[in-house]
Length: 113
Image (tube, rainbow, N blue to C red):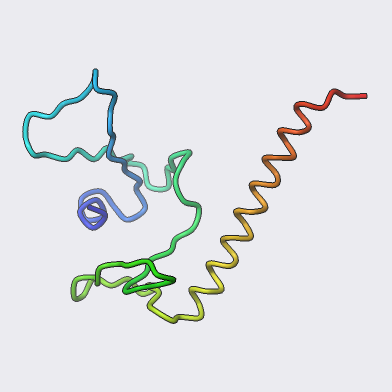
């Protein structure tokens, strides 16, 4: 689906597949619908912050191999030290955001003196 989106709209355009409320469900055939922002660089307010593309098995996760000629240049493979460093950095960034969110919540609850 990612490759189809890239080929039709562009690599820097974001798209989503919506799983609607039952009251809005349209299921009349075996089709999938992707909704894509045409403006490159427009980002949804949800999703991942960083790019991580792997192939093979990394830390126990399994990923299918890319089709010949479509493997990204920045693809991380098994036992790649780069992956470990990037994963550690992402984990630290995530921890920092969680702490910042906790601090913001505490300051909302604590009345000013």
